[in-house]
Amino acid sequence: MPLSPSFVVAWKCAGKNLKITFKGCLSDDLPATKLFSKADLDRLSTPSPGGLRFDSALWVLQEKMGILLFWGEECRSDTLFLPCESRNSMRFDDGLMSPNPWKDLHFSTFGVVDSPRLPKHFWMQLDADLCQRGDG
Image (cartoon, rainbow, N blue to C red; front, top):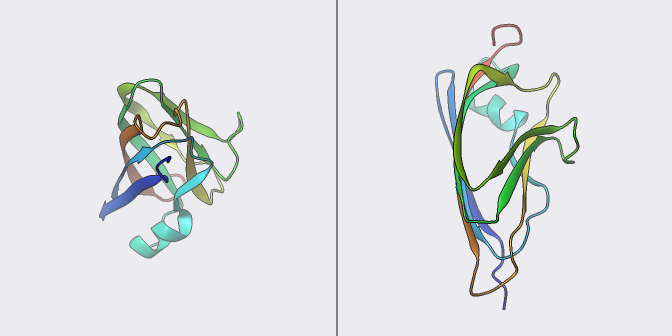
């Protein structure tokens, strides 16, 4: 019997700094799933942030699994934010800005083998700054 998708998303906001951590265990590929929305951030920050500037990403994914991060509900070449495989980290010297306008950030997975004995585990952390348009 396959495991149902199981994952946790946590945000920590302090001043203009935002840390998003998500982790889980999957036995099948996950379709587009919302990580957070602009409305979520509006509730965390005053004044409302106009955008996000991502400064770094760190991830550990079980072998053969991958995660796609994208803006909106569909992963297309114009909405793809960050494709990830295996273990890696990235620091963005100039930061990666959210599109203008933006509504939410989604993720989906690929390469997850449907096996009750071999679920795929993952952990990912994104660091960003909340910013007004123009101050990124």
